[in-house]
Image 1: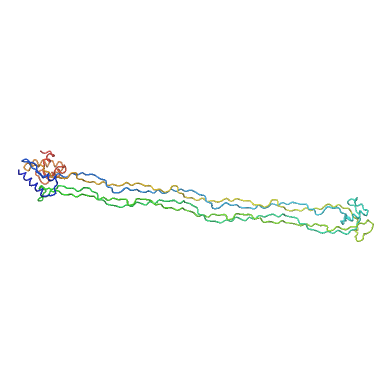
Image 2: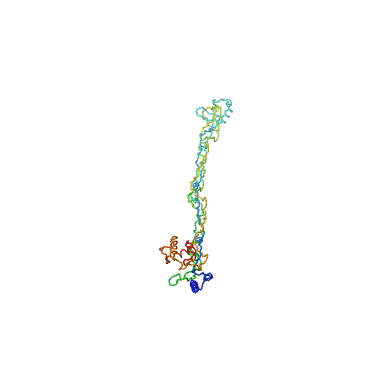
Length: 458
């Protein structure tokens, strides 16, 4: 009964110490129906917690842009630097000499007074001679008769002949050229992709690690925590600050136009082609002298011995009939055999080879995903709150030194007791019991029968 009254006092003290007791605390304050000789003490059953790991995002998923540059190829290209043209050469005319027989005197039959002085005889003389009985018709060449005459009149004329025919002389007017500058494409324009990197910002976030809870704790009385006064206290929630990096603006690309590249070269251009002008070369002429009868001589015939006719001169000789053939002169002249001409010689165009850079494959962007990054955060949550219960304890009168020694040895074997094995319940023994009770989920408070039983101590 004495022990019972002490327990009642302790219960009343506990109720007075805290006005925030829960229903469990009120129930635990009910004193058990103890039997005489049994001792009870209030024991704290600690709260039960569970620890679990939770993934917390510290960096959002994003993407990385990888620019695959454009691929270029090189090819050769022939560029005209000098146009094709023609060169004209002159083929001069060819000439040949030809001979031509020109009659310079007509064929005729005439009479002469003799074979020496070559004085001609007029037809009238012949007719007169014939009329005078001279056998003119029957005379043979070389036979002579006598004559009287008035001499014939002659003039000389100059005849012009073509000594060298006229022709066209060819004159080459050379072609005219000028140099001009031309731009030649050596690299095509293309587009280049430039990466614009993503921008990030760092943000902090509070992550709940352990929520707010209430726990029973012993209150110290006179410097010791074994007075049996329990207080229900609030343990504030625990947070952990997590720093994470998030994407502010995603990466992208921008297109940059790369202009074409040109090369300036000089090209010779034809302004006016070569041409041929004909220069006429006049013909060359020469003259020869030709004797032309202006008037025939006037003859009168008289028979030999018939006397001299009045007004006429006596030739003083006999005439002879002479057959004189026509006279010819051989002239040499140069004539054009083949006229002058031109021969065209083709001058081929000139080219130069340049290198041209072309885009084989344009630049492109590869998007590479960057996964989100998480961090494991360990959280401890209370699944069962602490509570205070009455537990039967070994009465002081029932605790022998031998029992305490067994208790100290058992706790020492399990690594809880560090003090001497002396059978005395000191602070080291009480601390070892308390630690053992906590680690094994037992109500904390004094040397309970539960502790002895779990350690195998009767």
